[in-house]
Length: 482
Image (cartoon, rainbow, N blue to C red; front, side, top):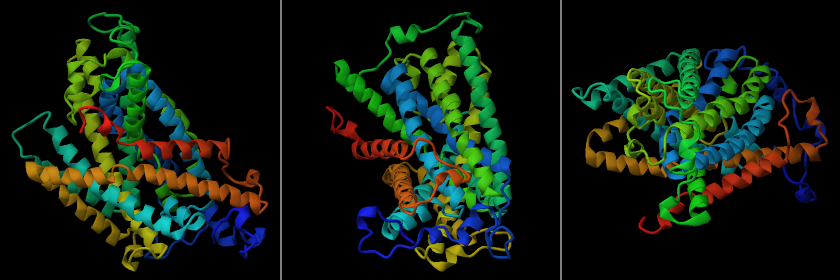
């Protein structure tokens, strides 16, 4: 059933308020759907509360936090970095709480693809679904290649193709063993990432206050010289500072991508009405501690003029945390940080494969993909979707050759904006969902989870994401960039 605005209801035969949520939907929200006590060949609810919570955390902490923040610092300066990630964190929060309310009411595999189809238009659901799957299918070989590059930090003697093979087999094996194995892998990977980022933030505070081996009290030194803001492309005045901030905002959007993956797991979670809202409720605090806390520490310890930020590699050498640690005279920790980065890369590849297979399952369930993709094994594994997505991992071997790597980069660049389009569609679906509830006279106070500050928070997030999509890539129009 589609939701429509009140202005369009005169010519349409809407269902009565009492049928807006039928018993099947209510049962699903309570965790009583047919997939809970599933026969062979159906999805299985085997993700426990700790799995769901850690999947949500794992989607928040990735290489964008450990490595990508260095490039953002280079572009925006310490205050530009902090503002960009703070504003984007608010946008992500607006999207996640809106998604949380819909997921709690409709905990189905495919999640927001289904919501876009149901509350906006099947055509948009089809387009968003296939584009979102494509982004994961192409990101999978990117992450697998990154794993090989990270390992080269320790040894250059082994061909990167060997590491690509090992990680491709490992991620595929974990997913073929079922959702419980995926949940356990994400639980331990996320635990390592959380411990690492919390430890790095605490260490950063100690180093900033002069507690390192060199006893150099940095304070806010780098906010004064070279300054709190960088001037993008050397454009003078407030225009250059604003463009630097906007550049960081765009990069922060890509760093936060993957936060929404927890919604894909709702269809396989035990008691999603209880467990999913608990995970969603903690998103704000994760963003505040991990990203805002991490960006503050990075901006205090590393000047945006540091030559090490220009490295641009995927291993620990370009991490601003490692740059700060080395500057303080600590030699052992960079290897540990590189292990954490490797864990983050494996976790990302694991999630790419999981998400891609579940998106195909959701599309097939909505009759937007071949029926074979909704077939599951006795263990609840959508084997056809998993196999097709895993096949795209073979594209990682293109990076072994320079010319092949160039072609592969073209594929990756095409998919880079897809995550933002997905967020945009989630908020659009929620706005339609919200007004549909209002028109049908339904009280949101009776829901298991109710997104705060609605609909205004969703309007804010929707507007910001629209602007970021429109002005993404604006730097190409600057002098010397084209």
